Length: 157
Picture 1 (cartoon, rainbow, N blue to C red):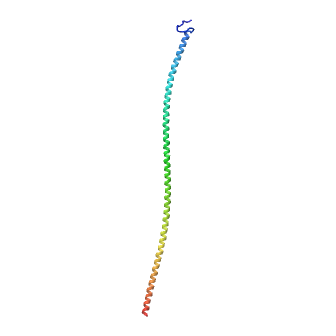
Picture 2 (picture 1 turned 180 degrees about the vertical axis):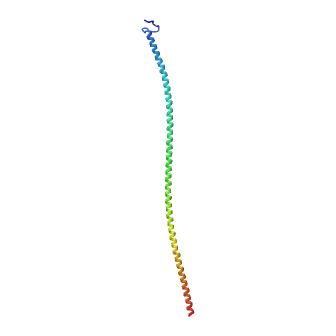
């Protein structure tokens, strides 16, 4: 039998009481260790939460940037559409100009043909005028000849 501690309840051996006390000390140590570990885990969770908040901010920034890029791409696409429309307008204008130039060239060809025709006509008229002038000269010569003949006849009579 062992000597009993006056604080030890009846029926419990002091060695059992010491064993239980040591076990409770070990549990308390484990709980303190677990509490420190949980504090470290909470700190790690807070750091991860901050990191995730930073990542979410970065994702929002990237999303805004991509929205701005999409807007810029739409603006460039609209600008290119306007440029394409302008090019089509210029091409149509140049086609109209080419048609007008062809029309003017045809008109000038017709004018040149008309001028050649008028030149030929004037040449024919000049030839006709020369022929008429020669004819009138012959007529004048014939009239003079007849006048002289009549003068001779009158003198003879």
